[in-house]
Length: 403
Image (cartoon, rainbow, N blue to C red):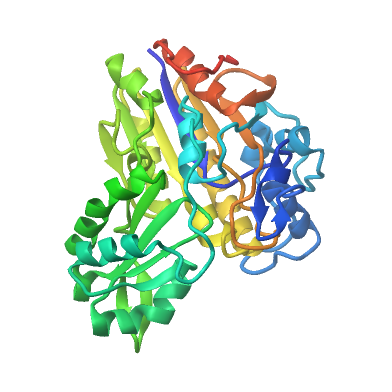
């Protein structure tokens, strides 16, 4: 029996989204954004030399078709990535009206988002008065801090000390459809933070806010504050069964690696493996060794996005890609006959672009284990249908198989 490994390289877009002019960073449309090509160009020009040097070196991804897929999607040059692909390769476009994590992942899993997400205005205060009161009530406090758009690391640096003195939670949002709550794991309490977010989640989901995110941190005003790995997303449920449900309903085991469990609210998931990207890579490697015949493994590697894309750190993003490529080489060597490994992304986050938000881009579709050739330009939902086809289970979404 066959196995499938669906691996999302969070935010590794390849440009060329046909509707990029409808999505913005500030006042600037995303037209022309290209996460992978612009990183490759910066590396080739010596503009990404912090902690690494020279042209972008991704031999394993390139031979699977990453450079070729980028050129297909956008026509942009990919210096250092000119291999003739030996995998099955192409690019995919999204139809959901968002460039965020739930939109991308739901559609990759076979269910395009049927509604417009609610986004909070970039004003201060940013939240409706009644929502601020509800947040304070859920926390058991007389008020909240923040109430604005902010970077998560910046706002805990700015308000962490005040939070520890007052006990009030730090509530903020971003350009995504999210309500985020930062609180100190010790002085506020991790369980209290998670309870607060769980209490607020139904109210925000009714508003079509995609996620309520608990952002715990530790440290002190003297030593500085650091976010921990105990983040938890309380995501709105998909409106229909997704790939993980299809697999589980067919009697297959489903393993989630990274934030997949949060994105899908553990729907259709048997085991969950969390941690840093380095820890997630070890989990993925173990599953390649141990996952059952007929199983689905669905993984997300988030640090491209969270540590480097939003912070517009080209060198850091390049380092992360090169690390991932090295690790991928070892994974590929362990695949069994009949295994499918499909690498893709959920949106872009061009670190050379203006602003700090995601960018609307097409994504790569790189497949090991199913021969060689070009699949062309496909749809996000085709990925779920194709994996279902490989696993010989019924597909319930709108996609078509390219296998």
